[in-house]
Image (cartoon, rainbow, N blue to C red; front, side):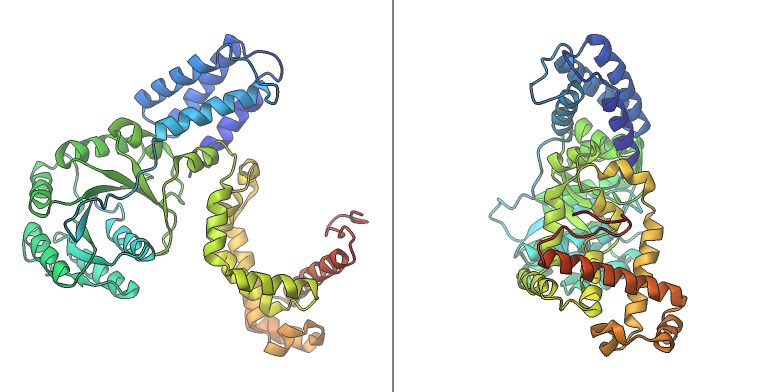
Amino acid sequence: MFESLTQRLQGIFDNLGRTGKLTEADVDTAMREVRMALLEADVSLSVVKDFVRRVKERAVGADVAKALKPSQQVVKIVHEELMTTLGEPGRLNFSGSTKPHVIMLVGLQGSGKTTTAAKLAVFLRREGRQPFMIAADTYRPAAVDQLVTLAKQIGAPYYEEGTRAQPEDIAVRGLKAAKEAGAAVVLLDTAGRLQIDDELMTELEEIKRRINPVEVLLVADSMTGQEAVNIAKGFNERVGLTGLILTKIDGDARGGAAISMRAVTSVPIKFLGTSEKIDGFELFHPDRLATRILGMGDVLSLIEKAEAAFDEKEALALQKKLMENQFTLQDFLEQLQKVKKMGPLGQILNMLPGMSRFQDQINQEEMDKRLKRVEAIIRSMTPGERRNPKVLNASRKKRVATGSGVDVRDVNEVLKQFRDMQDMMSQLRKGRMPRLPGMPGGMR
């Protein structure tokens, strides 16, 4: 998400003047392009107009700081105004004394409410809270089954009555069961509905009245586009939203929903669904999202992902192995699996400052295929071969290639890359700048 918007904005900023003051003509030209870029990203027209007006007022005639070029000055202003538009980071409200605290999930059908309920349960448990899930979607039989399956998968207690009872009655009885179970937080999964369906919206109002939730969170598909504004406004007017959860931000959405819904409803975005995996869920940080939109990376989120995937003691042991030339293909396989846990490589690279410029050169599908091929090749080796690849003669390589479904040349390529890495570490141990693969003569 946001890749197209990011590339458009970077092109605009690169075209600005490099010295002196920003003229009104410079800003006018840039803001016209920014306006088109935001509209193409499905940002609401009213939000675009207000955003462009604020940036223009600050940018025209702005004195360029000694350390900043005019384009950098505009980027700074746009970054700050993006953060203003995205709002303060929203956090869940657990201030009430009555327990369990009820979090009610609402939204359109297909927005990902049931999966989000499970993801939120996992998140809450990491925070030290005991979640309890209630299946109150009686309009889609598969929804009840899905919630039960997910609850069992993550080991969370749940309550369901199938699809025969009224949703508001299920919610009340489920809340009673949660109290008896000693749950700290209840996650209520409601049926998907259109905001213009008066009968179903009235049902939501009744559920809210009877269970008195501390949070009413709209689960919104970030790929919805400009209609996201009407959806958010409709739900907010009828049931009073306390927050937003944007799902599928790893997809092909153009990003307008994230910018528009927060600005139009004044309701904070609280979480982002970053992948289909059960742990693909993170707190919303407006400052980090703003830097990613502008192609400035998101190093803090990358660090958090790395900390979650890598154990500190294991990292120190790995460092020792590398420096003592004891790093094996088995170690390489284990590290590869941990990197995969951090998310798609394209997504990880976009968190590095400046890397978004090369987004169109990153073929995520091809990268995934290569990683799977490497993993299959190493898994087809015996433990002894992983420890000492030098024993891999022609017949062994042929066996590995057959076992992993690749050609012998693919096996040779993996082994060559592994040897190159060992050579680089050897040069580092000797205090020399390593020779970089693909650079004749290397670097000294």
